[in-house]
Amino acid sequence: QVQLVESGGGLVQAGGSLRLSCAASGRTFSSYAMGWFRQAPGKERTFVAAISRTGISTYDAGSVRGRFTISRDNAKNTVYLQMDSLKPEDTAVYYCAARTAYSGSSYKDEYDYWGQGTQVTVSS
Image (spheres, rainbow, N blue to C red):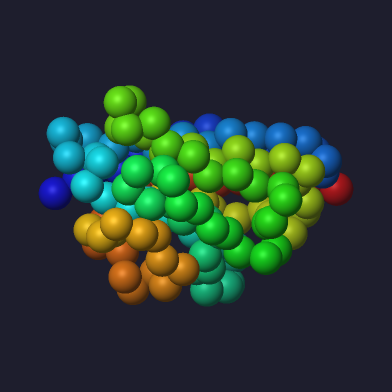
């Protein structure tokens, strides 16, 4: 089992940057593929980005491509989401998730563990 804790959210102006972190407990972090999802008020939770267990393979949603970058440091049991050129439509609660598999997935039902989320608000 793994516990996930997100941090790094906040209020930022459009065009700004934030880096989210997700710290995992336990000694088997490298056994999990990781993903980031987000949920805006009144909307479904949607996929943002995912990364494989080793960090070699990544992919992301088209809406964030070229602006967001997912990475991980298995020595620190942490996955990151670097968010640049933020837009008001990026405003949401951001969640990290862990999946017991090699590769990440864009389907939230394929993840086994979730963090509590961190709020990101982008002002225009």
